[in-house]
Length: 116
Image (cartoon, rainbow, N blue to C red; front, side, top):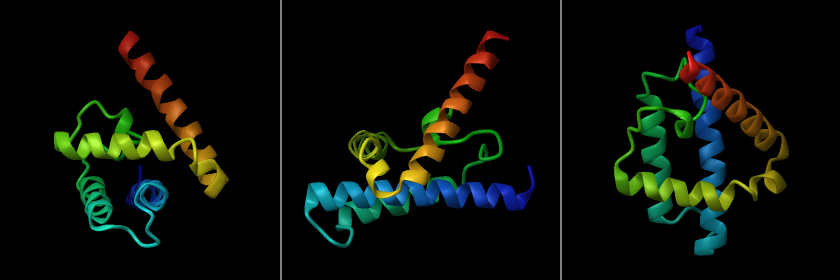
């Protein structure tokens, strides 16, 4: 995969995470802008994505075999994903559909690799 494609993939992943954190923060914390806790989570997730050595071969962190998030941050991002995942379709339907399709493809690929 070319550097441009990897960079584009990273940016899409970061955008999706940012949207999900914004949805979560707005509904759970009642803010228009990210609260300090959610801003820290967004910063942390972007840092993890920027440093990911597996970006070329994976779609999303949830499908990765190596989890680089600290346990506390991993639990926070899971909570955000559980809450925002079903709601993102109403805010950004195209991005939500793309996310689901890419995630399903990756899961099938991982299952196929496990069988080999």
